[in-house]
Length: 168
Image 1 (spheres, rainbow, N blue to C red):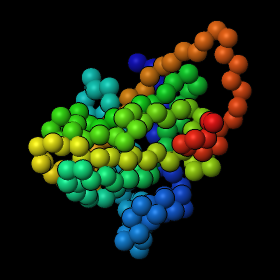
Image 2: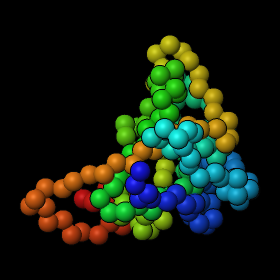
Image 3: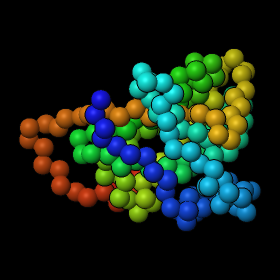
């Protein structure tokens, strides 16, 4: 196996800013929530996906959406990408969807102004009326690292500064 990446927490200040924007009701608890964040982990030796653990408990009824600031960023070698997906069981049982279908985390996102803070915007797309409940500390997202190639005539030389829309 190639060891090409490392998960880290964003700074406490960056987490507090992003988290209280998404969850203003938890503003006074943001530091304790930050301290409890666990870095993503594989569950088994044969697992491809690294499970992200929810910083807060949440419930999603069918059709509801939530944005979760994970408190996590990923430093990885150039030539690799981190793709984030809902955990398989939650996707299967609840049709849990990422709003951008796959969360693409590029290697240069790590150095962005927001410290490469990984966000997950999720929707319960259940057409069976199923309600999803995730408790703080439970897995809700999985990330898999993939190598990628570029075209022979690629001349990209721009520098990223941000997330969505930062590359034009």
